[in-house]
Length: 551
Image 1: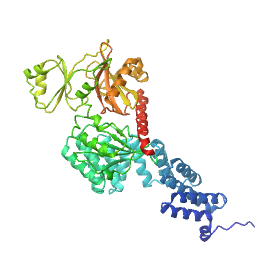
Image 2 (image 1 turned 90 degrees about the horizontal axis):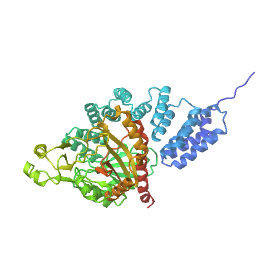
Image 3 (image 1 turned 180 degrees about the vertical axis):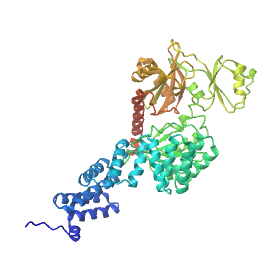
Image 4 (image 1 turned 90 degrees about the vertical axis):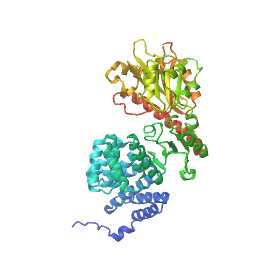
């Protein structure tokens, strides 16, 4: 006759040390005593490991590892959390929540593609697991798989039409897919379902502003600010290395920060400034660094003094002091840079709104000859930027326009082969880093509107410039660039420049409004140099935040 050992009863199980430690750990964790809870879970695992053949203890051992992972997640210890979830899954691979949480570890570590595989594994175990499905949608968004994310989110919205977060994420996806009206509708539904949803209101404000509906944008921004003055962007790690406060003006030009703040090791809270009244400093909380994103001195003429006053009152290190931004209008830059050896600054005249633009008046005031360039103040890119051949054409160009305009000396900078070349550098702290080279057969050059994607030789020339800028710019040119950096005095800004026929560095534009982005599918060789700018930016912020954190 064979005998079998009796399984322990429920009462016996409750008496097992591993179960006692599991219960104790959960109680401590509920009370916020994480250090003690972690010790309890570890004691429970140690007790379970001493009794490996107990069949009723297997589930408890797996649960202990899972709960330990949760506690580490709450403390921001992602590596330890991942190890605990993995240990739990080795014992009990059917634990859907563990697969999901392991995916969350990857998401918070900045690895959304790896997170997708783990969420998919969770859904193999339990296809209806809601957290895995919603987190999968966010991971798809993070990896740019917008169509797949939209399909999944529509499915989720059909199941839970009252879920405001699903509606919000649908708004984001539709915006990325350029389905603007659908995006507005989803964000509007999210805000209706959750009256505290400030983020959706900020999105509505931004989209309405892009559409030119400033009144509706202002209403949305104001409503969002009443709910939540700060737009929060959390670090990919916990705890974050530091916290920064970014200053932003919705109705003025700002440094594009979406890529710069992406996958950051720091928390970034953005404060929108609208008018002449600054916020209550005490309501902003503790932070280590101020990053001023308000960058267009023409568009932000009224709000920059507010930002400068706020930055002074906050008493923290400041990146791109608003007071220095005020000195970066095109005419002010032209006044800052003369006398630099090897540097050529085209002459410039700012024509105030309401000026007499008759042929006679213009002929009397112009300090340089035709042809010349004309553009409205506060604009960038090629819109409304024209080369004008004579005073009659200039009078006609200005006659029906509102606002200030810049009149700029035209300098022919075509190379010997007849092509025009415009180079962009980014100044990041002490570093001068290449960003792009635009090549075209017209004086008005913008990288995204050239036909460089159709000309391999142009791409090869740009790649060579990015890999070795001294192949184009001499040591004397870099000395000129360093002098420009010192005179401008900002921490992060860009310069568009070329070389004139005498070999001088020809300055087109210097400001902090220049875009750095990672959408370089047609020019993949740019990617490492774009990442270098992002890494240098992160390092700059960390250095400047350091003294405040040590204080």
